[in-house]
Length: 282
Image (cartoon, rainbow, N blue to C red; front, side, top):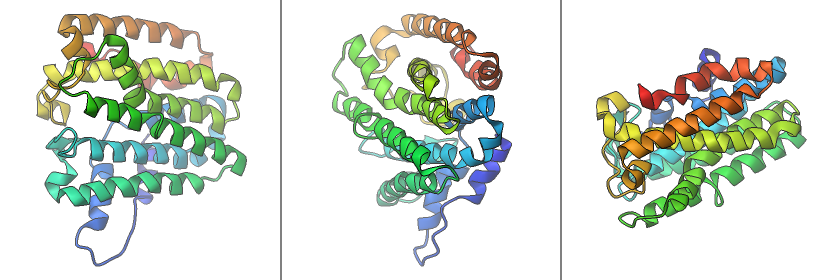
């Protein structure tokens, strides 16, 4: 991941112009840290089956991180979560203004596909990667989840509806990261299995975030916390104790599924997944 971080640094958006902070607004949230969870999953799949394609896969991993970062910028806007802190630094609309944050998100969204289109992979593979990223990050994926999340603030949903919300808002981009890794190495035969695994992983990730939102302060989390009272979070719906039980059950299920993977995939994914599977217990 250090090599990926160096690659990211060399491929930050560069836009010479007389605007006083346009370029810095595009870079701030990319260089401000982040878990790089989705790129790590994709690169883990690639290393498991064809390590020689790792360098080429950096473009794809960066595209996912760009799309994810755009979603965080927009998620923090006053019209949505109205958050002041992200990745341990002030959110973009706090650093600059709301217009700059909106446009930076728009720019990173489209830049993701520019970076992806320049990946040194076959056109056939790139088309599959574009389709997966657009589908899971767009109208039937992450954006749908965000739309449901925002529309139903202060309106209690049923548990299956909350799961649908977070499968789309969080799970689908995580699932796409694993699926796209399989596409890169020509393992379409396991792409669906990895995608389904990623959906469960995304749900766990969201339940953990909801738990950490009420157990950590802003400094520990690196973002605005205790901000979910009006949201359909798992803790709001189920209560803290039941949300912990749900997280533990899902963590056990994911661990069992991971043990069914072949040795190479287990070896490459375990360092990333072991760090996150039980983070709600820390």
